[in-house]
Image 1 (cartoon, helix red, strand yellow):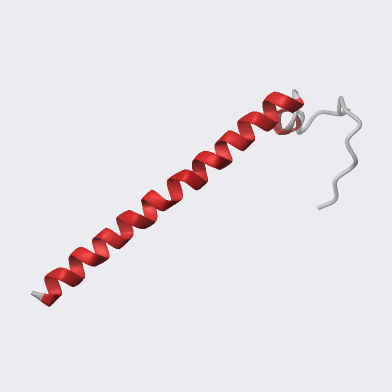
Image 2 (cartoon, rainbow, N blue to C red):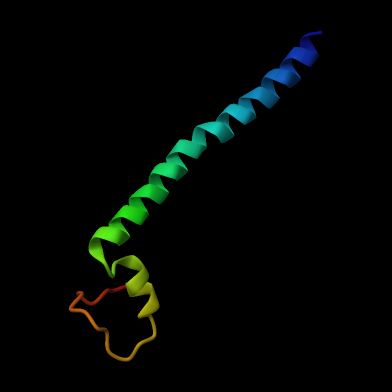
Length: 64
């Protein structure tokens, strides 16, 4: 009986962890969407400019 309860408790614990992550992912996606909407050409614009000869904006040079 105690082994069954331990297995069920472990499975429920994993389900709770997955459900706990969903609001965090949702908040991150909302933030990304709102920042792209407010800034116009934000991160997605910079990603699309990768490999371009001359960047279109006056962003500082990045060092890696």
